Image: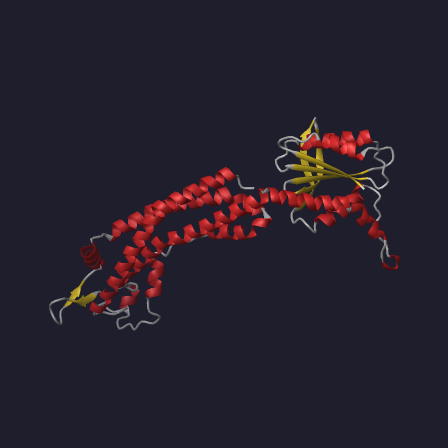
Length: 365
């Protein structure tokens, strides 16, 4: 699960980025939108054509019939005079601002990567992937390809050998559009990041909430309390069809596993447990999302209350510091009522709960 402290730190940093980089990039976007609208008028003065030798000729203001050959600098100077801004400086600022956002994106993906292993976060995993693959607007080359006409009439084939020249005003317009999309890309990223963090926060709170723990406890209590009736019902099949005989712990585990599947999605069986006193155990079931370990036992002849108690005490010691176990639930299936003092054994084992591990024992029926 995501550490709540880390989650709060990321949320705080996201808020700061919205106020600084995000706010400034929105201002730049508005400025560039106005300049882009203004640059559309450049086309009215164009006298040349795509694929022609006069591709960079424009009407010379003030002199009818006169043509002026210009480059991109001519239009950038018009923009600077009209808006008192230098496009180069704006683009440099966009680069620096997005650099900070990209750094935050990497941090966000790294810190939230643990949710990729959590099935319940499937929607959030999709959002996280979108953030990881996020594109920061368009490059000018992409915009230029979109602006080129599908077909071009060429009068001089030698021009093609030098490559298709882009009219200066088209190049400037493409440059402005690309910069505009890059500035605006911050808004899309921040929206995705906000949604992801909020959804992760809600699910984390739900998993850790007392209501959820209480609900899980009610489910498991109901399963264990009715397990014996369930096993008896399996014996009564139509037309005397063969059933499952509950003869040992493995039979109990198989049946319990099937029942747990009705209520929990991520059930891991035979997980390696931690070592204790030089030995290690294999837990019967780990409810991974709920961080609950379930140990299963079945009474048999010559297995006394004391022996069961000693086994359970060893189980508690094994899982006392297990990182994936907040609750250890032990289920002892005793169909022949071999345990003489079941409530006393339960009370003794449950008294071994610690701050890090809550222990619950069910001896049934």
